[in-house]
Length: 146
Image (tube, rainbow, N blue to C red):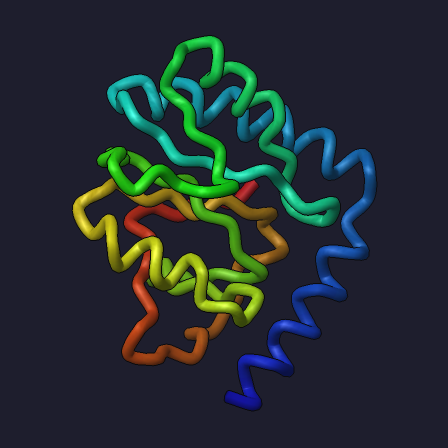
C-alpha cells in the first residue's frame, strides 16, 4: 500500500530527529512507568530496540532479573505469553500500528490474541490521524507514548 510506504518514510525521519536528551528521558520514563504496570504478568515478550527506537534496555534488564522476560529474537512457540511489548514506526489513538512492512508483528499478535499488548513509542510517533488499516492489522490493547 503506497500510503503506508510514505508514512514509513515520514516516521523514520521523525525518529532520526529525536535528540539524545529526549531519548534518555524516554528510556527512564519507560522503565519507571512500565515496571509497575508489568508486575502482574509472568511471561512477557519484549524486543531489543533498533538504534532509533525507544530504548527498552533498563526495562528489559529489570524484567530479566525478575525472570519474567523473553526477548524477541525468536519467540518460543511453546510459551504462552501473557504480555507483549510492541514497537512500531507509528501508532494512532486506536492502537493501530505502522510497522516496518515485513508483517512480523501482525503474525505474532494474531497468534497471541489473548495477551495484553502494549505499544511503546515516543510521543512524536503518535499519528494524529487514523493510520491505514488492513485486514491483518491488530491494534495493541494499550498505547504508551513517552
